[in-house]
Length: 84
Image (cartoon, rainbow, N blue to C red; front, side, top):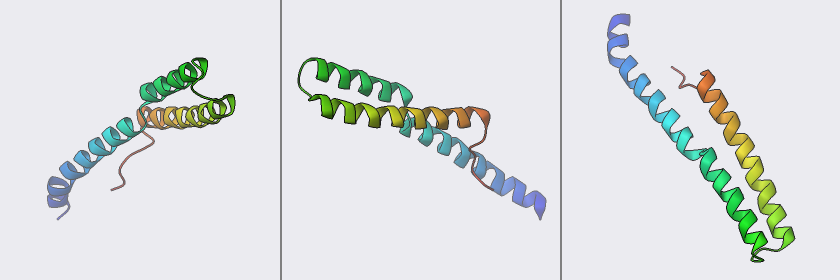
């Protein structure tokens, strides 16, 4: 019974783990967030954003970046995985 479970379930769990990792990697793309921070700064320097709007966006983006970096750190350390 356990051998059969291993043969039938383990490949699906492995696939779910890979899909989960890919989804987190795409959702928390640090390069894209860094690009958004640069774009925000450029818009501010060009005068298209007020200082208050720039600071509000910058704070939100930096929080996003910090969270995304933590997610990637946990992914590489193996702390995030699909529960079996």
